[in-house]
Image 1 (tube, rainbow over the protein chains, first blue to last red):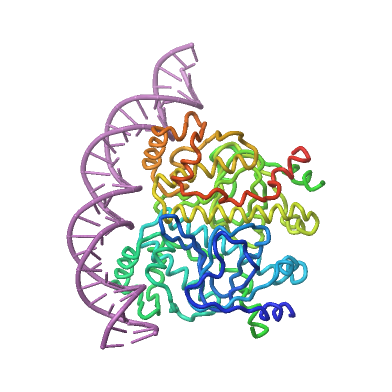
Image 2: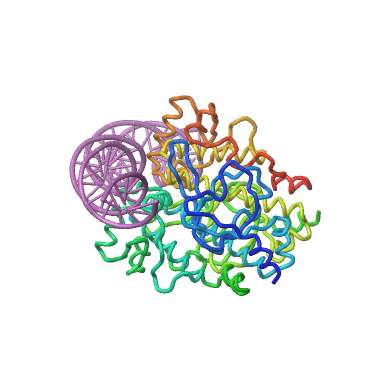
Length: 231
Length: 231
DNA sequence: CGAGGAATTGAGTAGGTTCAAGGCCGGTGG
DNA sequence: CCACCGGCCTTGAACCTACTCAATTCCTCG
């Protein structure tokens, strides 16, 4: 639609385990992640890390960065990643010029909010097992939503350390939870491939409601808007 | 500005400890909280509660509710509260018709995001003491930002249960942290009045950075937009 | 084939939960 | 005006989950 060319023109590539944006610096531009996997995270003084959210293809970032002086967290890649950057002047006009895309972005922001709320609940009130089950469900769910997975199998290029940093656990606790899930044949996880064998059971453990991401009634995922023109 | 009359016209009052919006139901309308204190929360199956965020005067809610089928959390009052409701059709036009107010809302959304991130970090990686120190700082900070407090003293109409539900602790753990702060003369807290005696020390315990809410360089708080016309 | 990070497992510890009891305070009704 | 009542605060003690420390094995990559 013209928009998409503008975006894909400015595509940047990043290696795995590299920072896209660094805490303390002013954000450089808005972007959409088009390929790969990244995460927003923060490093604490004692060296510990907390992963705030995962950034999947189709997710946008810093759309409103022009309002901010300095990032309060970093964004780093987990796998080789591509992003399409775009000027803020451009972003600001989106709702007016491309109402459908604007609505999709609006929606997307809503969904991210919902994810963050769920994370708060998980970290605040759930056991280690529940947290691990939860994060696995989230990842699978989101990948399915953007068409990166049929059935309930996904690529999981995360270490147990990463998973722990996402849900506030040590790798040891994550490992024990995973082992338990394997023993009970709830999941399979080998060489970066995760399969949820008994999702219902896992969601019960995670105490997730069926529709926690408001996925029902969602407009087309943003990614589709790009795919349509072959990006 | 015309806008404000429209809003204040629809003011609703709520008693303390009452739900404004209930999980599972579709949101009714957008609103701004004008007086009082509320919180977004969720009740889990085991009966536990997690408070997601506190809603202070000037905070908005459900601006985009028209996109959602059912709320994934409730909003309840903590003190007697007043809200100014408004139709979504109206909200949608704000950025176009009232750009300055639109910018303020945009900003406000950013800030809420920052608060949520901070919460995630606190719940994921910090000790009980740090979490309690953190939530006290947040509350004081935010009240100061909207002009509800000079110095570092605020009204704190929350029980220790509420505080615990906000930071994922039991009331017992909250109590012990508070006692310790009192012993060390970091705070004073009696009959709903909280005073932070040594903020620097508390922020250090909470591991908060000086500028965690991006309060530097913020445009006028939203509340000011209302106050200007005497709401 | 060697090296380094990740996964796995065990043992001991600690921070927070759970359970429980007593005191305080504010609100209500007589 | 005062007594009663219920919820909150406070504190102690036992328990438990997840952390810490550590050693071994496994994978993957160069």
